[in-house]
Image (cartoon, rainbow, N blue to C red; front, side, top):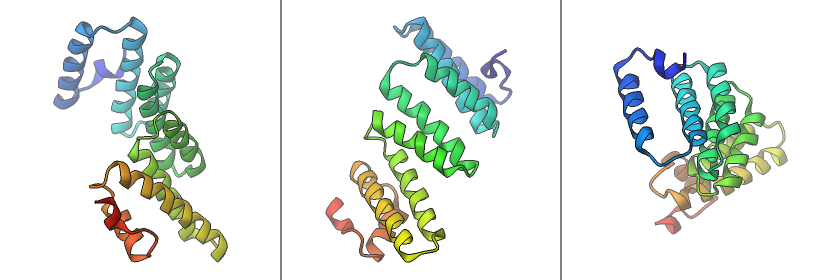
Length: 170
C-alpha cells in the first residue's frame, strides 16, 4: 500500500485526492504519473520525518522522471534529507546536481551557501574560513538575484560583512 493510501490526516488525504484527480485528467504518460506518485509519497514521508522511506520514494521517482525541472526538485529534496541528517557533503552533492539541471533553483543555492557558511564558522584556520565564506557569498548572491525578497538573514550577513552591496539587487 502506498503512503498516500495510508495518510490519516485530513490535509494529506485532501491533497492526495486532489492530486490523484488532476493526474487522471492530466495528459501525462503512465511513467510520468508513477514518478509523480513516488515524489508525492516521498514528500509525505519526509514531512513525517520518515527519511529512509522518503529516500526510497525519491530514488524510485528519479528512475522514472525524465523532466529535468521535476528531477531537480527530487534531487533538491534528497539533499534536504541528507542535510537534516548532518551529511553535509552528500547534501552538497545533491544540491549541485539539482542546480546543474535547474540553475534557477534559489533554495538549492541558498542551502549550499548555508552549508558553506556553517563550514566556515567551524573552520580551524583563517584561510579555510575565508574560502568557505567566499563560497557562501557567491551562492547567496546567486540565490538573491533570483529571489530578491528572500534570504533576509543572508542579505544582512552580506551587508554587515561588506561582502556584497545588497542595494544592487533592488
